[in-house]
Every structure is written in C-alpha cells, then in structure tokens.
Length: 457
Image (spheres, helix red, strand yellow):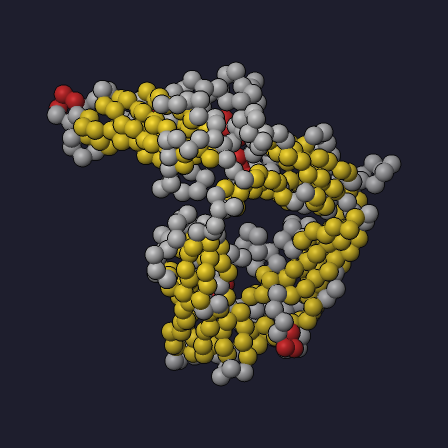
C-alpha cells in the first residue's frame, strides 16, 4: 500500500472537491451551451490576487466553464493543461508524479515551480474547443525555509508542535502543513509526530528524538533542498510555576470577566521549559470551594478563570500536573503529581462605565497580525480590567483586516488578510453594554490601523 505524503493528501482532497463541483456538459441540445472558459487561482502562499509562484511550493488553478444560461461548472479535471515553459513552471495534466511515488500524480491544474525566473510563463487550459490562459509573472526563490523551535522539551503525555516558516518577499509565512514530518529514528514509546502537520504527542518514556522536515518539491541545486532537523527531548517534570495574566491590586477579578493562568513546567536534566497551562494533564484546584469556576469548555482555554459570582474573601488557586509513566523495572504505570504555587483572587462586582482600546493607532504588515486590547473602566475609574475577550470587535474593512471576537485567546488580534497595503486607515471598534441592569449603556471605543507591505530583503 503506498505511503500518503502531504502532497498526496492535498491531491486527493482536491480530486474529491473537483469531482463534486464538476457537472456534465449535457444540456447542449436544449440550448444551454458552454459559452466561455476562464482560469482562476484558488491557492497561493501569499494571496490569490498575486501572480507569482515560489520554488518548493505548489499552487492550484481551476478551469471554470460559463454557460449561455448564466450557469457555470468546474471542469478542472476535464480540461487539458499545458505550460509555455515547463522547465520553469510545470502544470499537471494528471501526468506528473508526486516526488517519491510511482503511482500518485498531482491533480490537473497544479502548478509545480521548477526553476527561478523573471520571465512570465503562460498556462493554457482547453476544454470542448474553448481556451483560457493564466500568466504567472515570475517564479521566485524563498529567502529561507526553517523549522521552529530548534530544540523542544516536553513532559510526559502532552501535546506540542513543530512549525515550518518560509520567508518570501519580506513576508514570513507558516508552511507547516506543506512539509513532510518524521523522526530520524521512530520510537512510539517516547513520542509520535503528525506526518502532515508536525503535531507531537509525547508518551510515558524519557528519550531524545530528532525531528525531520522535508520539502520534496524543492528542486535540486536551488539551495533549499535537504532535510531540516530539530531536537525533541521528553523529560520528567521537576516543578511548576504559575502566574496570572493581569496584575490587579489585591488579586481582584471583576465579575463577568476572565483571566488566564500561565503554568510553566521545568524539567529534570533540562534547562528548557514548557507551557502546560492548557494540557489535559494540568488541573486547577480552588480553596475554598466557591462558585468561581474555570472555563473548561473552550479548546485551548482550560486555564481561563471565570469570575462567575461574588465571593467572600480570597480564593486560592493552584495547578497540578499529573505524570503517568512506567518506572524502570516496574510492570505498571505510576501517577505522580507536581503542585504549583498558589495565587489569590477576590471576585468583585462592579459597574462598567467606559472602554479604552489600545493602541489607538497602529501600523501592521500585510499578512501580519496586531494585538489590540480593550480595557474596561469600572465604578468611575476606581478599578479597571482587561475585557478584550468580552467585547464585540468589528472592522470597517473586514475583507482587509479581520478581528476575532468572543472568549478566545485570539480575541482582539487584528489579522491582515491581503498581501497589499491598505488604501486608507481602517477603523476597529470594540463594543460592550455597560451601566446597570436598570440603566444599560452601549459603550465603545475605536482604534485605527494602517496596513503596509514589508520591505523585501
């Protein structure tokens, strides 16, 4: 049975989508005929409005047929695809084998860069006598492809990940899912790694592994070929240190807000640390037991303390990390708990009277991110609390800059969706209802952001 690479997974998914999208050219007899065809770009490292391709990375084109009745169909798999210069940029006609396979081929319309060139390449697609073209303006070479981190230490039975980054035209892009991941020497008793996503799951055994990332589409002689490596260490936990997200006076946490706890594990025989705040092996304990609770229902947000009710006196929170492993010479697993320092919280009921967004102006790179923070002013300025996760965010140009909203770690992080600069400042707004139940007030504040293109190296 053939081994499925990252490329083949994309190939098979594309085949399924295209098969579903394609429709019959039938209906010609009743007057509904193919009128024209057009090539569209559906994937790109930067964005689909750009016309470059880049060594080591594939792009996908589709052929769309437009009919006389206004309908359209995806006929990518039924078209014949050719390139004006396949030595620079090949296009699959279902006849280019995926590297390392003698059975699997790239889906039709897949662009495979072969050599760096500033001369445009014309891709042609023909279907039922109709022809459409797409011009790739250049094939460029990434400045760098690397994996991060180069060394990582993890506790038993935790989840982690490796990332692959490519620097292209001044942009640093996450290309983790385009790499093929493995260990130089497999040992499933120490850890496993996802072949297509770099996701690591450690097991119950101390050990050291070498992580490998390959980009099989990097052409020989490009200087980008070869395997990237990093070190993975699985160790026992030596201690836990817990800190709180905000430095509120007296440990106060205002009702109907949240605060994230950060739990850092140190290790035996290692100077590295691991953030275990959201790991399933980490649990949080309250003393005394109160109605204050943890938001355990959110993926990646198990460490959110939710001020759900008022309490009398402080609440002390500690974190526990449970290791499950089999000691040398033993026949059964053992559970060992490591306990962190305690943090004191007092839940306070206060009235929200104002919102301030910071920074009030910012400049961010295209395809980059910028964190914005919403701070609530309570009881006439007597207290303040970060309420970034508890406001509704909006953007005046959501197709250019998008801001997630809701009780998520990503709340308030503006994301530039395009590789081009904004033509004018974009307004971001944070809103929340304040005041009292009897006299509610709609509160808001705004910030402006400009998107710029980073200089190419």
